[in-house]
Length: 214
Image (cartoon, rainbow, N blue to C red; front, side, top):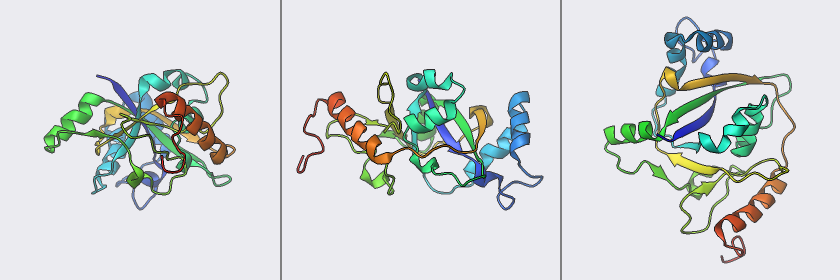
């Protein structure tokens, strides 16, 4: 019953061309979340069902970012700690809107079994990189990935384990938070990658990882 979180940017689902009949706007979704309006929230999660492919999902264990979720600036903390660099940079004056999804490992497993899939969790490889500068490989034999924290922390926080699982279809119950963000300074990705390499070498005991030929 390990809880998993995933951050989804939902702006494209609010576009007039994509929104369901009757419209779907952020303010109405906020009210739906406040009142528990499952029909309105389902109108949002149904938009994800329209994707016909088998998009793998990068996510994280909720327990590893529980302290961040308690803070008023939880959104930026999650974006930074999970290495979601693709949510930067922001267009000046244009807010971005996000939904924090929460579900369990058991739910992922059950959806996988319904599709005849026995192994639904895997280790991310360079195939999933898609030119994302915050993607970072791990040494061979490592059982899971580690997200690249985009900010330096003092005191330093442990790296978040990176989860990759098969496509997961949401229900309205999985929408836990909705938030709008107007932007922030773009983190230094080169410095973040250098910090991450040092952390990764320490976490795995591979002091030579990243050297040519290793």
